[in-house]
Each structure stands twice: as C-alpha cells, then as structure tokens.
Length: 211
Ligand code: BEZ
Image (cartoon, rainbow, N blue to C red; front, side):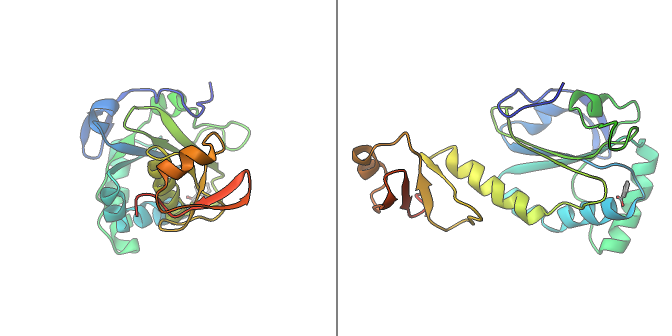
C-alpha cells in the first residue's frame, strides 16, 4: 500500500554496502532520507549517487542520514561504487541497500508496474526523528532528481517542525516565512518578536524565526 505523509516509516533489516542495518536503529534520533534507484550501472543513477556523495556535508550539517536502495545485489553495488567514484569524481560516503528480493522496495511501494515493472522508480522518503514520513517524491526513471531541492525541503521541514510558520513558494533558508493561519494576530505578536507584515489577513510574513 502507498505510504502517506504522517505514516510510520516501515522498519526493516537489510544488507547494505556498509554492513547489515536495522533501519530504525540506524536512523537513531536523526532525520533520514531513503531514496531508490531503478538499477545499478545505469547513467542517470550514477550521476545521482555521485551528486549526493558530493553534498553529504550539507546533509550532515542538517542532521540527516542518507541511504540509497536498488533491487540489485551487493556484488553489483560494490562494483558500481568504483564507477560512481571514478566518473563522478567523488567518494561514496553513505550506504546502498542491496534489495534483490525486493523486500524494501515492496515495503515502501517503490515498484510502479505501469512505469517500470521490475525496478524501483526514483522514490524519496524523508523521515523525521519520530520515524514518521514527512515528505515523499516520485520521479520517473528518465528524470534525475534535484538534490538542492531536497536540501531546501529539509530546511523547510526542520523549521516548520519547530515554529508555527510555513514557507512560501520557492522559499530558501534565510528568507521570510508565512505565519500559519491558525495563529491569531495577538499570538503572532508574542511568537514573532521581529514583527510581521500583513498583506491580507490570511497572508502574513515574518522574518525566519531561527535566524
Ligand atoms: C538511468 O539511471 O539512467 C536509468 C535507469 C533505468 C531506466 C532508464 C534510465
């Protein structure tokens, strides 16, 4: 069954390129990103895995652990990592789950038979420290993901989990936020000492509260 926002992130034990893990134990109190790849030794996936390795310090800075999965076996992953490092000029620094029996893929509904029937699509699950699913994305095999966008949504998710704000279209860390409609003006004055601008009664901007 499809996983929806707010659902518990299913737990599993799996072999990875960095040893056997119990997913929830591996996450600990961190935020997590689980992202799937259709297949090893494919061009778009190679660029994606390299891109994530290159910005791993950005995920670390935000307290996010990253793990990839594809339905190929461990030997294949290990050989492919050499190609990723060579072609993307990086060093893989996060685990890839070997999922040849498609256990994790099935648990997270990553195989979409009307798209590609025997491989995972490009799924992304962002998981909070409470092990709840905070964000899901699904891309077709033909489109590599934008991992800067993933950092941007992590910034928004982490901010809005702590403050009664939402983030507007194309928001980036450091920009003004929107006060959530459930907060009345009197409460907003207490919560946002930097002040707020009312464009419409339902559209109020405040400087990012943790900056
Ligand atoms: C790729 O990663 O390049 C890819 C994988 C499966 C189907 C199409 C493209």
